[in-house]
Amino acid sequence: MIDITSLSKSFKHSHVLRDVNVHVPDHSVTAVIGPNGSGKTTFMKCILGLVRPDSGTISINGISAIGSAQGRRELGYMSQIAQYPDNLTPLDLFAMIERVRSTTSTRKTALIERFDLGPHLKKPMRALSGGTRQKVGAIIALMFEPRVLLLDEPTAGLDPISTGVLKDLIMDTRANGATVLITSHVLSEIQELADRAIFLHEGTKVFDGTVATLLAQTGDATLERSIATMMLDAQQKQRAS
Image (cartoon, rainbow, N blue to C red; front, side):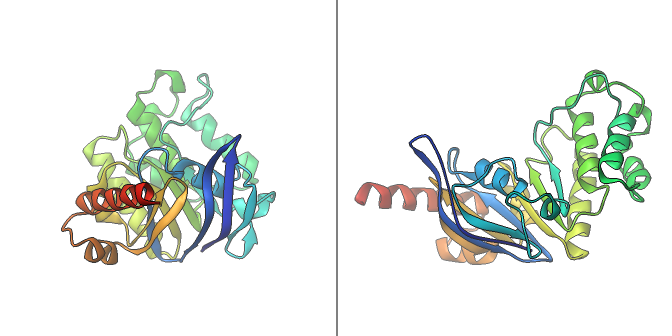
């Protein structure tokens, strides 16, 4: 699980996150949603340890994730646009991750087969298509069966078959007790995968609960329309204040 209390972050004079409090339980897929500039990316980077918050606490399964590598060992992360050394092959990358973790993945071979990555294992990353690079990123995120999985636009660039494979793996990860956080602009995908949603607007949490509660609260039939309703409400409250 992830517990976040009073999380705040500013860059120069811009308040990106404002006193955010969140509890993300095990056995769940939670979507982090909101308009561009709402603080989603900074929120995720704080959990990953890529951004240090100005104040607040973050704990992953009871271990502090701020300034501590121990808590982050629980994490698997898949970026929308991952940067890899162009000269390395997928096999090189998998071996490098195993060396960093000082352990061998027992799941790597099965994941390579699921994503049909075999024909590309010895090709340099610079020769791979964007979708194939996403498959590599998915395997890296999942190969050590993380207890906490963070996904940033995970299906971007994937073909329909690989998208289905990844969705099945996300749900398997959830069923095995993990905590999954996901951001995506494809709201139909969020509605399919997520149990819960955290809605951020200009760095402030304005909703935290189940997707069913969000739909009922706005009276909309789809998550896309529900988010649009919440954005309009947030903008109107901002103008009134």
